Length: 134
Image 1 (tube, rainbow, N blue to C red):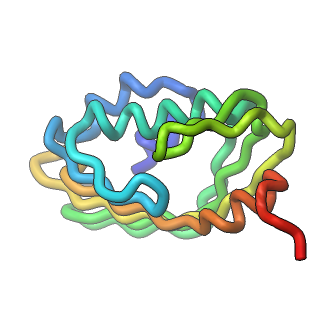
Image 2: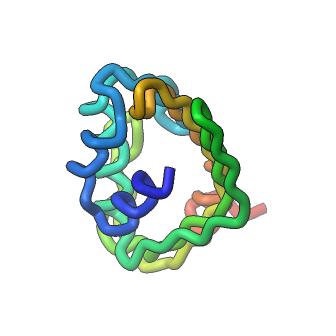
């Protein structure tokens, strides 16, 4: 899990090929279920491209031989267009985000074969100033 986080923060997404099975199944709040390492890397690339000065602070970690759970906070500044799962994009807002998240990974033969991500999409959009005001 820490190798994934380090690669994401550094923007070195090719490193994910060493950590993940080629047939990995990933679930996300925004894009739904992704199948395969290429789809997973693209999903991460869209985030990395949109947010500069990324950082991650882990708050809780639990690892066994077959599972890893990480709870923490991802931060970054929205400096480039953010591609949405429907193909549209959001122009850069220049706003800094702090997104709490939890992810759960399942490992087999030393590779992550399933990874489930949980984060609040509405909170992210609100921080970017993209939710309607009441």
